[in-house]
Amino acid sequence: MRRKRLLVALCAILSVGCISSVSAQETAKAALAPPVGLSPADKTAIQVFEKQVKQYVELRNKARETAPKLSKDSTPEQIQAYRTALELSLRNARPNAKRGDVFRPEAAEYIRRTLKNEFQGKDRKDLRETIFETETQGVVLRVNYPYAQSAELSEMPATLLTKLPQLPKEVRYRFVGRNMLLVDRESNLIIDFMPDALP
Amino acid sequence: MRRFQIHKLLIAFLITATLSCPAFAQKLATNNAHGAAPKLTLPLKEGSLRFAVIGDTGSGTEKQREVGDMMVQYHQAFPFEFVLMMGDNLYGGEAPQDFEKKFAEPYKALLDQKIKFYATLGNHDLALQTHYENFNMNGKEYYRFKKGNVAFYSLNSNYMDKKQVQWLEDELSRDTSAWKVCFFHHPPYSSAQKHGSDSQLREVVEPIFVKYGVDVVLTGHDHVYERIKPQKGIYYFVSGAGGKLRTGDVKDSSLLTEKAYDRDLHFMLFEVAGDQMYFQAVSRTGETIDSGVITRRKK
View 1 (cartoon, rainbow over the protein chains, first blue to last red):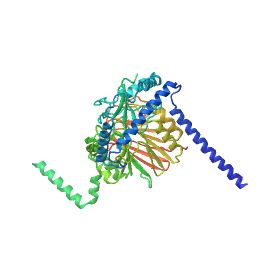
View 2 (view 1 turned 90 degrees about the vertical axis):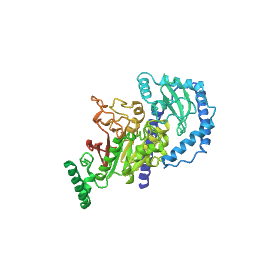
View 3 (view 1 turned 60 degrees about the vertical axis):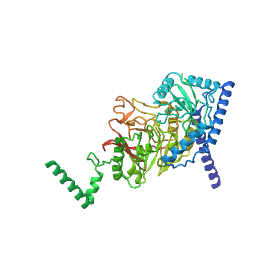
């Protein structure tokens, strides 16, 4: 009898755990839902884009090996030394980098369309307001050059990030006016950019 | 000539009194530059968790320094263990001298007392700040730590991507802490005219906060103080004037506002004791601009 009660209690605990876990996944799913209705051409464009990004990440991680190691409790001097070394190393590793290397025409077209489709009406107005209030004076749009340290970084709207192709942790999307950039997270180098991406 | 002599006499008296009477020296130390001693509204309960909050600090101005000085004075009366930073920790550059002028110097007295600062990234902060020894981010743009019965979640609202959302949901779903506090830069609710409520961020994070019983959300970005009327049971604060101020920026007619202050810089103090979280917002000059208590919801 006692063993039976114990079994019932164990089952109850397990089912609460499962319900909690399932509902956690459901909430995440709602927020993280991918764009629906991807055509084969879009899928290919995204795959090619992700491949280009992956190649960049492999190159940058190799280039990073020449930079001094950075601990989790570094001094400002160590941080600066690391950033400078990484930037130099990356620029040397991609001497011929140019606009469109990563944002190939197909991927650029897909991203432009996503921005246009996903952000309409009030959402588009909010998105544009968020982007345009960012003070980006001093940013020179040039591949393989650093994003100006003194300039503000545009917030990437959370709802938009759920719709764009996912990036590895080393790389970030960023807006400067209507232009969309890909930047290196640590060195802040502009990897590539797409002019007039925002509708 | 006579005035000069009076000044000399006064200085002599102060030196003598300070040297001969420790109580007088202590009283002198706790008085702020504007002549008022810290006026605590917090209960100072035994065994309580005490912390401070500052946001949008990294201007390197004299006024930022004055906020730091006032925090030191309040720390004497209310020994807080750590400080949460709401982002925009360094404006306009991140060379070693920027870290010094905009952070280490203004808070030197607190750092010397081994008070820990836990930072989050704002829209003026580069990612490598996560490796700075005094920001205690351990190289991570979003992280969790626990003190007593309170779990703190520092989020990167500049870049709320799928990975971060998933991490947040996973962590919160198994968090059994009595209190859950999230802090990040962009405010889901704000009555300031410059930026205001970040509705896109809110759309993604609010359902998660509600679902997993987040109690309090602390933010910055708008250079004002605002306590928002509880939204879906959650208490939201904007504390974005620790080093920069946007005077008169809060909309007078906002239905969101419980209490707002946009006339001077400020910082906040919190005390958690059991099911109560007490708070006090203090201006640069030591004036209490808001205070109250939050009672934990039954979950």
